[in-house]
Length: 631
Ligand code: WTA
Image (cartoon, rainbow, N blue to C red; front, side, top):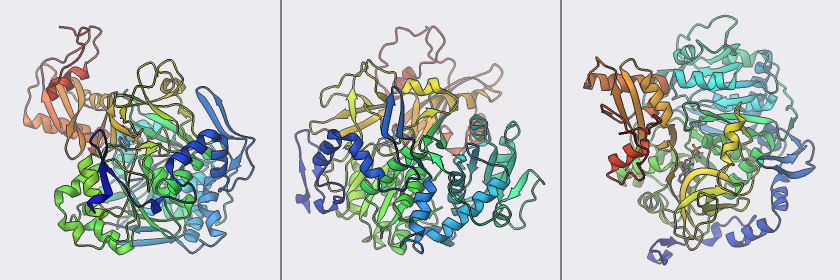
């Protein structure tokens, strides 16, 4: 089907999927839908929000007092009512809400009714532990149904969940527990990865050494014999749940009450607790799951992201439950027990929508076509990607080898802070490999210069969002100044994404990378400063600098430059020790893949390490202005 693409002015191939992919319920075509949104933004969001159940309607759609927005003002709701009751009370009661597959081929199936009942009972268990509206609960669990139950149970009673990815190390976990002042930590005894059992509880114990706000730990015990628990402090997950009353009415939440905090790495050593709210986030998650990912009632939908990340929150759990879809969730890594596992699962469950990350796609490319070719992938209708730029090679492989030229490829650009998709190519619209696409209806985005002025097409600039949107973060927990900074660049009040981008003549946006010191490794945000402070906390290290270095598989790897304290000498053993130290402190994803010893680091006269100079030197590029360097 070579005729399904043409080449535009700037030599980019354009792929034209079948227009029948357009979600007719919402739009005839992108241009009309976007124009309609611009004509009446409030009407646009009112329309979407009206699909959901509100205990009290809003007085106004949006109140914008730069840089603070309130959405669905004075409305009342509970997201779990919309994720559960709304379906249980009508035709979806016995529909599968969640198919879960363990690495060892174990299967668990929860219907909407099962999930509803489990959530209510676990929510009552949390109440018994003294959790009430507004309290923070940290969830540090592997990708299992109990993780979903724990999150929804918090939302049920108005407690604010803060999910921490179970791959984080003790110190990273401690920072997130203390940062959120969590009252409860919910964890599991262990997780499973590539056939190996990884203990989680010892990490939690270490993280709790200096965490004075924590009153109880709920432990899902998975081993035989189960670990013994500290009486009155540690509680078994199922004992807590099964001993609690069954019925738990939803807490009535103001639309602007916080729903969750999710920590994301920033450019300082302290992670940012991004705060999302009950009403606006719910509307954003619902809208984009339905209209961007195109999830339909009979679909089986697989988002491969762990709920420890925002993608797992919005598109692994809340979005699909709001639309009443069937979620498929799996613990499995792409190549265990063999590189055919994902394709086997797609065949077995008849998965219709696959939402994954470019790193995974590139990993599969390396394994070769023979793996997907062994399985029937004809159930797939939509393929989507997130987390880092989907490079044209990966786009084409996804399109041809997995989608067999039938499926639109939806490259979704967004952030933990935005809560929902912002820029993408809607299903049925012409696709340009390498370009995420255009701002979706509801979002006003542009590429601007430092002052906030629009730059002409084909010139690089900063990606900015120019108007508030319902699922925007409302603040950074206990750090309002840091929140304000997002809206303070340039002369115009816009939200600065810190991403670099370029827009072509047709308005398609290509994401070029970060403009700050965040390193995106396999789609995960790693803060240079976090890695550096982990390294410096080792007794042998005097100073450290971490940069991102492009990598064909992972997008970037972390490269660290280290100066040693007098008396220590570089060795392979020390390199191993330093990597191990970062792993224990922050977790495996933050470990520098490359580590170089150096006698000095380039610094400004005020003593700031110039990572930019290191990066330029590493990549053989011009370091730019180095007039401030201290010789
Ligand atoms: C990057 C993940 C290119 C970007 C949802 C952004 C992307 C950061 C894409 C946010 C994409 C995410 N193309 N880059 N489709 N999606 N990014 O908060 O740099 O974990 O600012 O949210 O990931 O990462 P976060």
